[in-house]
Structures are given as structure tokens and as C-alpha cells.
Image 1 (cartoon, rainbow, N blue to C red):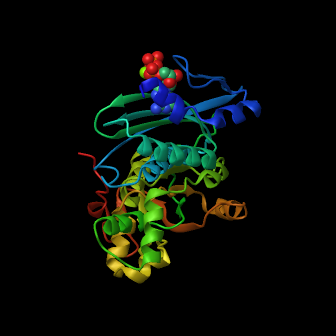
Image 2: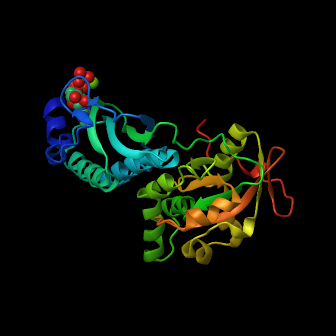
Image 3: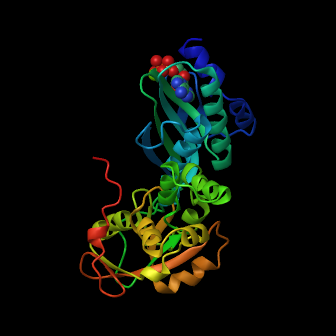
Length: 320
Ligand code: ADP
Ligand code: MG
């Protein structure tokens, strides 16, 4: 098998055909030429984001191929959710140490399962030999001027998060050898390998949220990006942080809270909005819970409800 038969066998999926029959006129050309061609609909911006996952750094060495593929695509699509964009397509740069057919088969299954779940079509990529590394670039669409940015948070806005925080950090403890019950281990590992991009929520936030980010490096670290871009500070009510039952019942309260504040990989959305918009948001049909965890204040930094300076805790995941 050479590079081209590999691409044909594992990455030129039958879904290309079914999508073509749905006449997705925005994909003028998919896999197989020098470039893919995307025809952006009138009055739309194309949102682009790229993420690289390196074996041993972003996923453990023994991770199953389908889990790696799922996680890579979900993590990238989460950036589209954070912008309020509609998922459209993606490209994949895959570096593999060898042509291991069972591995590629499983990888391809995971990739196309995630792609169909998330509504994105693979339109191109690159395949090379080397240490296992995946780079996914996702493309999304949003109406001009409607994308959610990080820079609009205003004093008095409420700070909200979706779902629950800290599970993915707890999953790393499981991957590191800690064992809870089979069911609880499974719940946490799923949260790590199959993060659910909050696409419906992101789109519902257009016109309501003043700033939005997805929580990839840790809640405090990512909230700081909003604060820095918006030149404001935050007060967080620690007891209101949303923690899952599994996290609360298996970890000491302080450990659970630290995971929620500083652990990465949750891929929940953190956003700000004026208080009077909260009811408008909650009245919508969302795909997840939303919890108010604090408010935007003047002056820089992040403080707890009791005045504790949280910024020193907020290192989050640092890549270097
Ligand atoms: P080029 O040499 O012009 O860059 P390649 O030989 O790298 O082209 O790729 C041939 C075609 O296969 C291109 O359309 C490219 O987008 C696609 N492709 C290569 N690798 C992958 C992959 N891992 N997944 C999806 N498409 C791929
Ligand atoms: Mg190429």
C-alpha cells in the first residue's frame, strides 16, 4: 500500500458520495485534487481553526486509534462552537510511524463517526511518516459580523459555563492509573476522549453573549483570555462551579474544585452576557446545562466571592 492507496482506502469515504447527493453546493471540490474548493454562501464568514495533537503529549501512548480520531476532531470543532459558527468541513494532516492497516482502519472509523456526528466533511489533507501526530483544521460558517469573540465582556455581565468542569482532568488521573468503579472510570474517560462541542449553545449565544471561549487549557486560564481581551476583571462564586456527580462523589472537595478551576480539556463554553439576557438564553432549546458562576467587574484579575486572589491558581495547561 502506498500513500495514495492509503488515502483512497481510509480517507476518501463513501460519505463523500452521500453528501454530494445531498447537493452540498458549498463544497465545490473535495479530496483528490491539489486543493479543496469551498464556495462560501453570500454574506457569510468562514471561521478557521487548526489544532495539533501529539502522541504522548495530548493523548496517551496506548490510546486506541478511534479514540484519538474522535478526540482530535471534537477538540477542533469545539473552537467553532466557541465562535457560534456552523461546522462545515475539515482537513487532516496525519503523520504515522508506519502503514499499520488495522490501526488506520480503526482511526478512519472513529474519524468518520465523529465527522457524521458533528456535521463536517473531510475535504483534504496530507499524509506523512514520522512520530504519531494529527493536525485537524476545521472550517465553519457564520453570518458576517455574528461570530462570538473574546473581547466584548462588560462590567456587570454574568459569567456562565456550560455542562460541568473538571471531569477531563479527573480522567487524566484514571489514565495515570487511579481506579474508581468501572462505570465511573468509563464516564470520566468518555469526557476526555469524546468531548461534546457545545454547538447548539454556541449558536444560541449569537446576539446575546458579549464574549465566549471554549475551556481547553482550564477554566481560570481561559477566562483570563476573555478578561485580558476585554480589559476587565472577574469575581467567581466558587460554590456555584458546576461539578459532575462522579467528580463530587469520588474526589475530595478541594481536589474536585482544583480540577474544575485549573484542569484543561473540558471543552465546555465559558461566556459572558448581560444579566437581563440570561432568561432569554435559558428559554432556548439548548444541548446542555448553563450555570452562572460569577460576574465581570472592573479592575484586572480574578477573585473569589470571599476576596481570594484566584489568578495565582490559574496557570492552567501551559504548552512550554
Ligand atoms: P499534493 O502533493 O498535491 O499536496 P497529496 O499527495 O498530499 O497532494 O494528496 C493527494 C490528495 O489527497 C489531496 O487532495 C489531499 O487533500 C488528499 N489527502 C492526502 N492525505 C489525506 C488525508 N490524510 N486525509 C484526507 N485527504 C488527504
Ligand atoms: Mg500534500
